[in-house]
Length: 206
Image 1 (cartoon, helix red, strand yellow):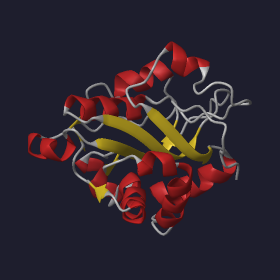
Image 2 (tube, rainbow, N blue to C red):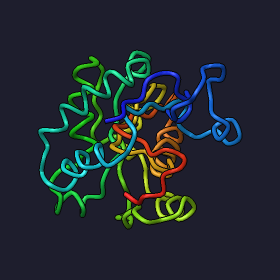
Image 3 (cartoon, rainbow, N blue to C red):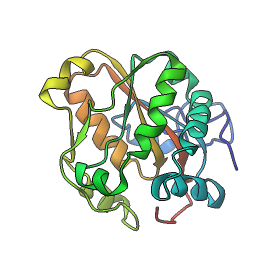
Image 4 (cartoon, rainbow, N blue to C red):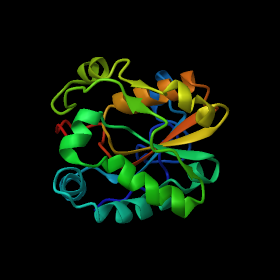
């Protein structure tokens, strides 16, 4: 397992070879809707196996392990946050999978950090196709306008600093869509905490 330690890009969590700059060239050229991001480890054959076990093989016992990883890698983000929100899955997919892997990680993470857990503050309005195998632009189109904060949940979000939790960061399209929805609902800021992130040179679909 290749864990990510400083120096990393403050904007996307990418490992950097030197600490003279806070952000990578990509984040400087095109800032994201989520202000900061941290990943616990690199997405490779080792982390991929564990993540897919949680996602597709009912290994919810791994969620606590991932939450501990995120409490370390995302400690700075959590220390500044008011609430934790998981990236949602559509209700149709929830019926077949029976749980949301991001929520399974976010729940113990919020408890450990001592901040509020908001499991249903963000919804996926439509059942988007899998992001696997899609290009960066294809991923962005796939999740365009897919996320929203229900009107009855806006008061939970307004003026608050949110940490968004997911399992993997690839192009950032999903996290970007979620962050935009949270900011549109009045969030003061949105940061991202994930278990693993791909490197710039990786092209393997998830």
